[in-house]
Image (cartoon, rainbow, N blue to C red):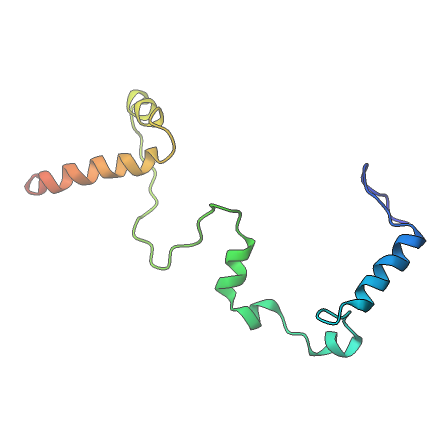
Length: 111
């Protein structure tokens, strides 16, 4: 018998009888037979890979960009600049990008 995590509740034989009775009484959602399992297809095949990937993400977690608009780079900035932007909270890296983009647009001729 596998080792159970503390707090795991194991159904009694009486519980199993009640559970099985509930399954048998549910005409809208019957218990699967071997034939049902034989006809089953992978979720990605039925729902599509994108949907399955989306279901794996945590709430609020972004998926991959369809066409990335930004390039990942490594850049050294002064501690003062990083601290000032971090102090503005989540999204600080986006704000750094916005400031740099505004500067580039304002000073196009200097490059």
